[in-house]
Each structure stands twice: as C-alpha cells, then as structure tokens.
Image 1 (cartoon, rainbow, N blue to C red):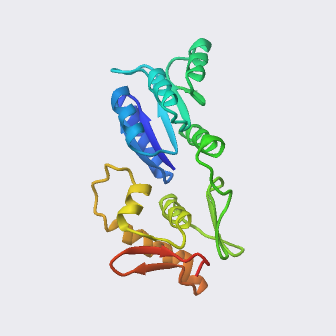
Image 2: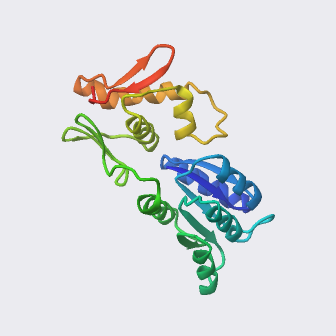
Length: 225
C-alpha cells in the first residue's frame, strides 16, 4: 500500500511513517498542503492521509482541489479537530474517512486498508500464480495449502511481483512501488528481499517462480513456477 501522509506536525508524521512502514507500506510525507498537493499530482498513491489545519493550504482545500481535477484517490482526514461540523465539512469536500488525534496506530492502518478495498483502483480480491496465492485484504500468502510466513516488507515485494506476474520488472520498479520515493539506501536491498522470498516461496516447494532475468530484472512466473 502506497501512502501519502500530509501533516505539519513533524514528530507525529515521522511516528506515523515509521509505524506504517513497519507494516509494509511505502510512505511519502509532506509537511504542508502545497507540497502535499504537488506530490498527489505527481505520483500515484493508494490512499492519502490529510491533516486539516496546515500552512499554505488546508487539508480541506487539498482534497477539494484533487476532486475537482478528477482525482478520486481515497482520502482520510487526520486531525485534532473533533467537532461534528468539521467532520461534515471534511466529508463534503470529498474526504472518505475521518480520524481524530490522538489515535491508535492499528486503527489508522485498518482504516487505510478498508479505504483501499472500498475505493482504490480496482484490483482482484486474491492474486494467483498457479498454486501461489496472495490476499491483499487479509495480508496472507499461501503456496498450495501451506501458509507462508512472510514479514510485512516481504509481503509487499511479493504482492508487487504478483500484480506484474509474467512481466519483467527492474530493481528500480520494485523500489519505486514498495519503498518510498525518497529512499536513500542501497538499491541492492531489493536483491536481499528477492533472496528471502525465494527461500520461503520457492525452495521449500522445489519451485522456481521468482526468476532473475540477466541484465533486466526479475519476473514472477505466471504459472507460479
């Protein structure tokens, strides 16, 4: 799940970012409405989290502008304001949900997943490649009847490969879709996670679903290997 978080409270935003990334999300952060609107226009997200009161442009105006431009990415308003008319305004300007600070991180994550299921780009309920299956909503993966024990990041890499099954994807395709766009670490981290997935998804089942295409990238076999 690729998330845009727009909040001028730097410490809170960093905490939310770390929590979501720990669950396998790719999170980009902006600290004012103007930068948030620019990111929403320039990059594709599964869901946007908007604070209401921000410098430059309010969350209400960011959402209203996106809707006027035909962008219907699900929006959750995250705010310290808890008046019922504030909630009404948020929903009337095009928001999809509303969460008042302080909040429990698992509640935020559950709401984001619910928004993606309800209003994100249309996706299959369960991704399949032969007997390899991934359920995006439940965040579970199976090889036949066996449930795969994957970390949150491993699940996100597998999900991306399964959405592009049969296609060659580059290392940077994986980085762009699983890690945030401001990732400054070693790009070879992708190779590390591909290796981990092979040890869990393929080798115990004598399969070779995740292929390395020399000089190009990786491909998950459409038939699951």
